[in-house]
Length: 320
Image 1 (cartoon, rainbow, N blue to C red):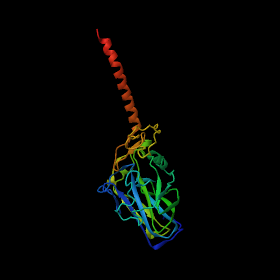
Image 2: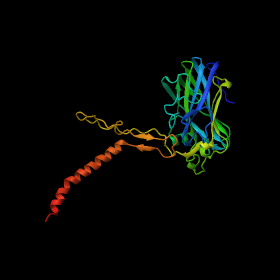
Image 3: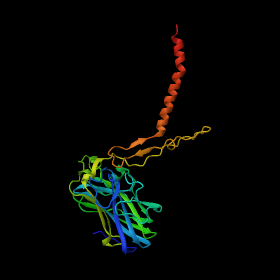
Image 4: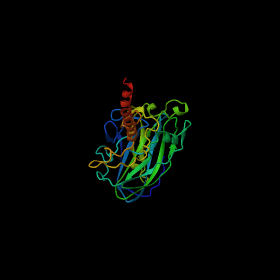
């Protein structure tokens, strides 16, 4: 049983509602995910939002509990930022049940880093999986601030069904708080192929679904929430480091605007790399670099100019 300590008070009118993002329906789902409403690759991140209403102003605690293994296979191996691959800009989307009373005009958000997890399974650490994914890992809050997140506590046999649990302490500035995070789907390329073992990621789970839960708001067991995802929703896999934030390119030299014309290229500053990961992608991320394109264009232009310069001389040399 998960322990807790209550700092604030969850009064009788307090409600807690957990949604997860259905990636093919493009909507929040207050129920469970499956192949009819979602397609997620191994290494993908399932977004969650938790709307809490009727809080007293002050400090509160809640547990985020997630299935690390299901039937002996890796399920949600760690928690990550909520909108890395899906649901960006949709915190207030009018679907599901966890619609905050602060919507549609949410206040400014803040976030807090999830702790690293040194837990070892089958000779590989969860922290290694976090590095292998390179996904950002932060818990986001609206309507308050996060004070602390405990290191994950693991319970249960990893060869069967096991879970991780984090205790979140937060401070509310009003009656409503919205939290958002993501569940990272274990990658077979890491679990356990990286050390020569068989594939053991989320796509290997069969039969029963695995779960994300929120438990014991301020120590109250009757405010618990539970959402699951079925194996039928897992299709394909992302490559290593697919979710790493793009590395900024060196700043392009300033250009002098032409009289009567704009000085910059349309679509943004030159040299700004972009990474596009479709919401249900199973392919490597597509990287475009306008700086590289510009350099190639300059080389081609210089080559063409050189040819125009030497061609007349070649023609004169060939005359009798």
